[in-house]
Image 1: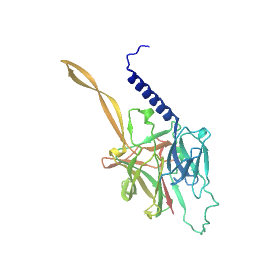
Image 2: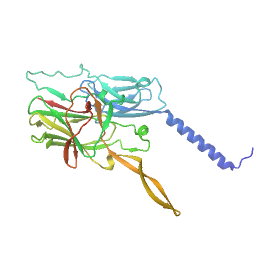
Image 3: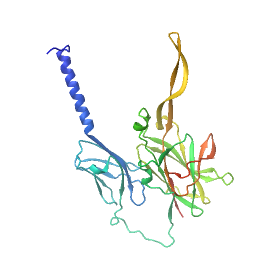
Image 4: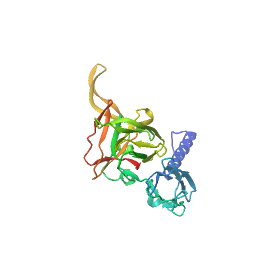
Length: 327
């Protein structure tokens, strides 16, 4: 057989092709399971949950926001993900029917809980603008992502004055840029500020900042819980705002390449012609979740050039932002 490829090069080529095919098969055989583990009752993320892929015996633990990611080679369809944590019932999920993007809810095990004395007149907790993990799911066409370049704030109203703020929950959207804009480069990380504002009695917009917290997220957790139980923050009056302030730096960047309709005159080899320019659209994490609801929503304000303005969103659009108060 005639060939113009030298013997050594031909053998090298065959070996290289074999290695590439082997690597491709290994990559195809890999399975990644990731998601978030939350409490079934409170819907608050649970950190340090042990997650085990039973047959391969691979294990990991959830992050501070309950996020986990586990990758295994050649996972069997009959394998099982096991979630366990002290004070909760162990949960087993078959990988065949669970999918690779998971929202896992663990049920408290009442047999392991300590008895709590219930006193008359005990303080009550109330969730304002409660949303659930269902509202954060990617399914359906009634979801959108909300992002600005400065800040936005939502108005809340407590049942009575001088309530104590216990926690804030934020719904975060993960966008499938590979399908939406394949050329985009996205950061899965997010760094931003959460502010609690008193209401300005004259303008009714966010006024004095009562508390500021900086959040740095290093995973893809969708439901973010900010625990403020140790802050002992008392809300003056009944109305207050919770705001998100974006930090526009490379840590948070998602860059998308666009083609503009702007034409620029160019000269080449003595000829003049029009050329289409490329442009870049930069947006920043976090992307908040907007979802449709029939319930009356709070007033949303956004800041532009240091001025607060009412954001005229769609009539039935709500932002996944809640506050738990104690009174």
